[in-house]
Length: 411
Image 1 (cartoon, helix red, strand yellow):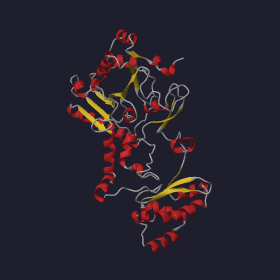
Image 2 (cartoon, rainbow, N blue to C red; image 1 turned 30 degrees about the vertical axis):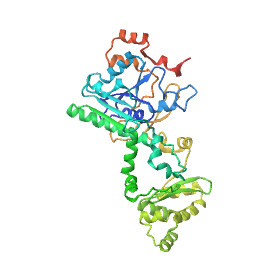
Image 3 (spheres, rainbow, N blue to C red; image 1 turned 90 degrees about the vertical axis):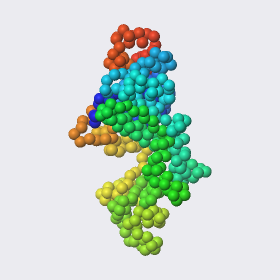
Image 4 (cartoon, rainbow, N blue to C red; image 1 turned 180 degrees about the horizontal axis):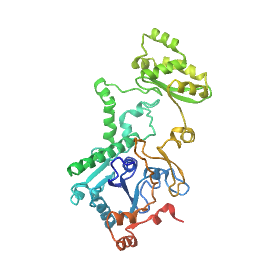
């Protein structure tokens, strides 16, 4: 999908999740993202899960829609090639996205060649010290309130939420800096710390202020939704569903669908609460949950689903990921967000493009993740303008490589 980024060229030198996901986001909006790969692959290239071919589903999923150039980054000649790619002339280039600290990719040094350079460095902490999503999350307080967690028995969630949020912040920041450069000609040195993303989100969601002004640590609530009514419930056939009654409409449709209006009215009178108020529903969550639990336990999922859907209850069944991919129409062929890709060594499968749907905008097909060095020659010839002889010499001396050096293609 092209929403104004088709004329941007972004050089990405990255690992882990946040930076590659930022690059993927930009690529899915039309940017030409060139992924710098070590010959033979970097630290992510063999990360689990793996196909029998040895190709990583992790790496190929994060590097869809990008181009790959394979360079020996240990050699000065290889590093000079990357510097040349980052600072190559043309109004669409001069953008670097990275989370790898290296003096040879320092903004100030590169900006001497290209003053309008835009760089975005993703860091662990604001002071430059190392951190990953899981170590940052440990400091947020969330593991002490996730499920049955406590500060003495924390529960880690498995979603790398701070990496994801950081990636989208980085993509937005690069887009904004590129827009400003179009208007003013000014470059930008952008730095984004993973911990800053997490801790500022605590502020945006009120948890930081709650801690400062009320001096309270939010308790763990099991599977209850904080501040309103919502929880998981078991059905008669052993399935589990999640039900949310956060808004007034969601609450009303839930009570109506379960046919518990009289019981709810009696509960309000006994407790002196008005369940039209979210906070009152939250205070009485256990008592309300008993009523909903009894109703769900007397019915199968097949009985509950049509009734809840007809009344527009906010609910959903718990699924495994294989169950989701096999049975949920939201990830099926009718949803244009999903398309079939067939990357080498992986096989055909449904893969997601950008979740954004823009009226009147063609989505276009995205390319599958490349092999290492699949676009090496195209980039050297087309971006740097090297001659065929010069490119051949770089191959002969081992400074660059094409897809034939991808270790998953051996034999």
